[in-house]
Structure formats: C-alpha cells, structure tokens
Length: 237
Ligand code: FPP
Image (cartoon, rainbow, N blue to C red; front, side, top):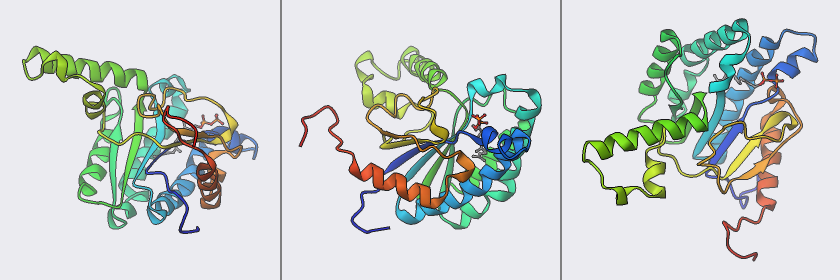
C-alpha cells in the first residue's frame, strides 16, 4: 500500500453475509462462520501491518440470541476454539484483545476463553482488537448509565462531571472514536453497532460477503476512505 495513504486510527467491521456465503455454495450457514475465521485472521495481521491502531469487530449482537439454537451453539463453540487456539498467534503479533458486551448469558466456557486471551495479550501494543460479543449499543447505553448512576449515588462524582468525554470513558471500553465503519454483504444498516463511537465515522458497504473480504478488499476500502472529506460538522475545505 502507498505510504502517503491515511490509515484510519479506529476501524469497525460488521462481519455480515457469512450465512449467505455458505448457502450460495450449497453449504449449511455455519460453514460461513467457519470460513470467516480464516478471513479474520488474515485481516487482523494486515490491519496491524498497515498501522490500524484499533479495530472493533461485531462478532455477536445481543439480538443474535434470537437465532436457531444450533447456530448459536455453533458460534459459541467457534468463539471458544478461536480464543483458545486459532487466535493464539495474536499473543506473539503484539495484538491486544479486549471485549465489549454483556457477560450474561454467555456460557461459562466462552467467558473463560475470553478472559484468558484478554489476560495473555494485555501488554501488547501494536493493535487493540475490540471484539464485540453479546454486544448492543442500546445495552451499552443502559449499562453505562447504570454505572454512572452508581458512582453518583456513592458520592464519587458530581452531576457536572458528566460530559461527553466522561461518558466515552465509561463505555464498555475506553477507545477513541471510530473513523471508518465497514459492513460487508451490501446491507446498509448499523444494526446497534457502536452508535456512540460512530457519530463521525465514514461508512463503507462493499458487496462481498465477509468470508470473501480479503486483505485486497480491505485495501480497496482504505482507498475509498482516502477519498472522503471529513469535516466533523465544520465547513467544506
Ligand atoms: C453475520 O453474518 C455474522 C455473524 C452473526 C457472526 C460473526 C462471527 C464471525 C465472523 C466468526 C467469529 C468471530 C470471532 C471474533 C472469533 P450472518 O450469519 O448474519 O450472514 P447472513 O446475513 O448472510 O445470514
């Protein structure tokens, strides 16, 4: 990739289209999730290489529990194998893994695998990989509001301490705002993904399903990001 390209500091990826990818190949939907892991591994390495500092991945939404039990169970097992085996290479690659979302009602084994990879990568510095698992923006707003109310009730903060920055610091993770949100598969929705953090993000909707979102597709996305004129509410230059 050319040196002069601007690399977004924080990229969000809504990994959509796994089910359709598999169905179009005459496979069961879960094969799409399985193939997504390969794509994701390559993408994580690539993002670290090109200098992305934060990447947030939408792995499982609070609403995804409405899916067939067999698919939910498959995904939970896939999370366990990913965090205990497939993604262990992140430890050596200087990638720090953190999670956003509600722990309840995730199975104990998934929580253990999440805690382990988070602990094993806690001192890594190249890329922060924020995995949104059992995540929803609305749930995050509720949980953050409760957390802040508790601080107020305990006399730890005054009402005037609550401002935009304070709210950001008390979300599931204290991360910089999203610069670029990519949703694969051609769907044009945010689907409850990081709404507070995405307020001034640029959006990109490639047609490819997530298992086909290769590093070349990511580079195309970066070229598109470089065409955008970001004004943050200011005037056009
Ligand atoms: C959306 O595609 C994808 C999901 C709900 C699951 C995403 C999970 C992964 C990519 C694998 C695991 C991730 C990590 C971080 C280990 P869809 O099933 O809604 O596809 P469809 O819209 O074609 O039905």
